Amino acid sequence: MRTRTGIRRIDWIVWSLAAVFLAYAAVAAVPPTEAAKPTAYAEECGACHTAYPARLLRPADWAVVLATLDRHFGVDASLNDTTRAAVARQLGVDPAVASAATTKAVPRITQQGWFREEHDEISAQLLRSPAVRGAANCSACHAGADRDQFDDHSVRIPR
Amino acid sequence: MFRKALIAATVLLAAPALADTPESLMRAYAEQARTTSASYAGPSPAAGRRLFHQQPRDWSCATCHTDQPAATGRHAITGKTIAPLSPVANPNRFCDAAKVEKWFKRNCNDTLGRLCTPAEKADLIAFLLGAKGGA
Picture 1 (tube, chains in turn cyan, red):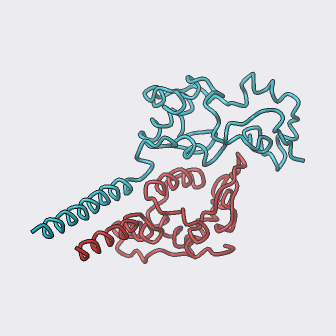
Picture 2: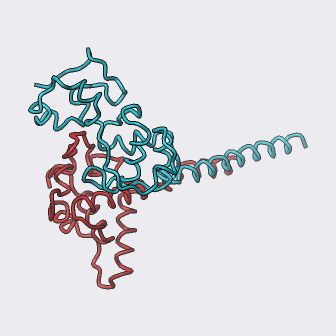
Picture 3: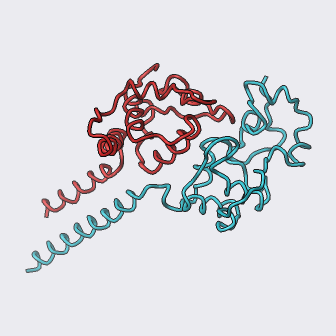
């Protein structure tokens, strides 16, 4: 009798494990873009450009960027509502504001006063060079840009 | 007991089959194409190749993904490195239906100025699956 009970207990454990695993598989089958992933900003925005640190623009400016993703500097960078809300929260923007229609011009980090001051010794020619391809390509000179490392002594100007 | 453990192990091993594959996505797009056209002949790598190089406006697929889809690309504006597009060279490609749809919407708009049809999407995947080296 004791043996039978022991077997039943092991059966129960095996089936519980199977149930837990099936639940895991069901969760894993949900497309990642549908879930509000904590890495949404780095994955979605960082796919095409440096995941610019949130502090480089004001929240109100980020809201305009997020509300105009379907015409994002000449390309379609649209996101579904769930993902856009996740990105908004990571940038410190109210998701409701980030989805409100706007006619405002899309703000550029490279046109901010602090950016121009920090880069005033960099020639337009260097910024246009094939190694850089424009001021938006932080990592051309700031190797740690994707990790938010922009300190002066780690800058390497490509020649 | 052991039989049940075996069943549990089978379930465990079968889980990755829930994920999308380039082939399953290509078949799904081809199925969609068939529902709108009875004469649809199935995915065509040659048509996919033409689509990849088609450039009615500023950009083609090759502008960023290079003319070798198995090679590393570079974003035309930002200069950001783009991992190879061909699933032959990059196993992370075409294994998430929602992600694939997101990029088809964006990039068809950016290159063709319109959305791609299901037949075009199936053609493109067929082309990329055969893109080992140059294209």
